[in-house]
Length: 175
Image (cartoon, rainbow, N blue to C red; front, side, top):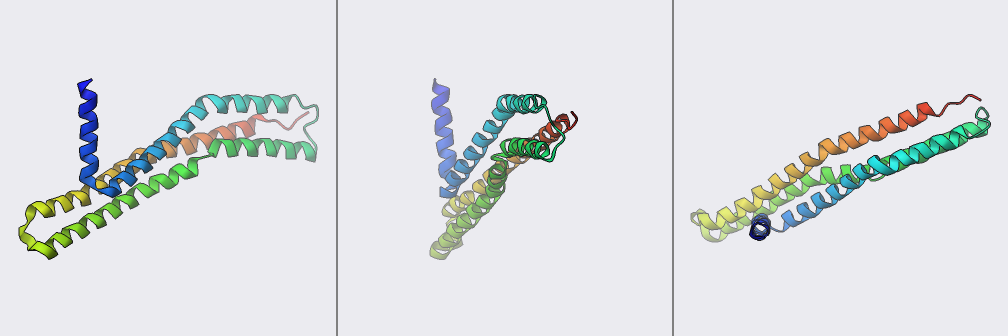
């Protein structure tokens, strides 16, 4: 149980080291990962059921060649596409936001360094070090957050496109 307290203490110290921008980065990364996990769970469960249901509904139709049947098929595919890609744009936005927030942390940290230099000159190294850590820690956290999301959002986007294409190919127009 002591390791849990040590972990929370280390996280608290890290968060205070990076300043207020690091909290915004942490919230952004947390939201990004919640959405990523939600999409993974959707792909593993709901998407398969939805695809199977659409396929069964289409195959149970008696007539599949008319213009109306073609429009129904397109509607089914479109709804599946929408469900498959839901939230992916938000994840991509959060991935892009991470390095921008890191850059904001860099700027705010450097402002505090310049304030220390203006007040006490360049002799107060300890006060300047706090500003430098406020400048570098959010930058690093923003880049790590973005890198952790880039791969997964790419994989999720590809998987959604592949599943939509597979469904489209499986809904035959004969009969």
